[in-house]
Image (tube, rainbow, N blue to C red):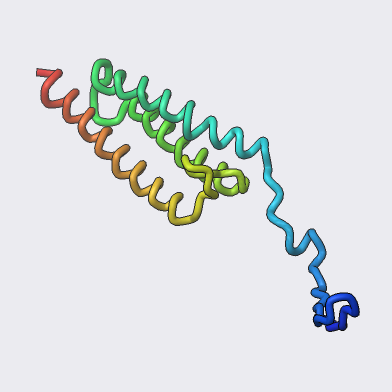
Amino acid sequence: MPVSRLDPDTSTVQQNQETAPPSAAGPKPMALRTAVIGGLLWMVAGPMVLFMSVGALILKADGLWTSSDGFYAAGLAAMFVGRWLEFRSGAAETADGKPVSTRDVCRYYLLLGSSGLAIWLIATAIRTLWLRR
């Protein structure tokens, strides 16, 4: 509850605001380890696995669902999980340094899922329709 008092030096009324304890009102503490693991998964490990598995999908895979498809799915899942881990840690930032919002993460998931599916379908079509004749 705010308390008003008259300041004799300035002849103005000052209000004393009661502050909440730092644990209740303070920002969420950043989990650095989770942020680093999440960032490495969605920015380094996931794309690296995707890149290597797309090559294997096109050149070496036979059939509809092979181990190369599994590696591709694992790389895609690593990117989803990594972004989620980084976002939940409280340390996620956009390219311009602003905190990542839920809208940003949803947009990332939508673009990653749709482009990942499109790339997989294209690679599967190339290996089954053009390269295996």
